[in-house]
Length: 58
Image (cartoon, rainbow, N blue to C red):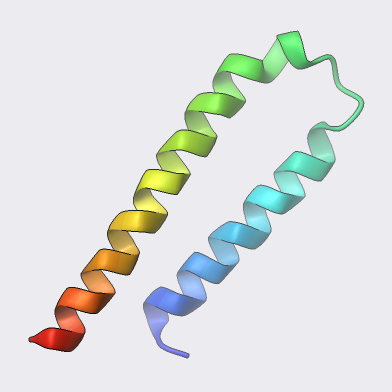
């Protein structure tokens, strides 16, 4: 497993942990922040995957 794969796997695990931790907390308190964070992490995850593919081709 290369570094990018390890980091993206750890990001997936961290987001799953966050989702579990937020269960039971009223969603109105963190909904906007969580949605923005999830979107940013998803974008970063995608960019890292593309960078890995580009580096493999170089």
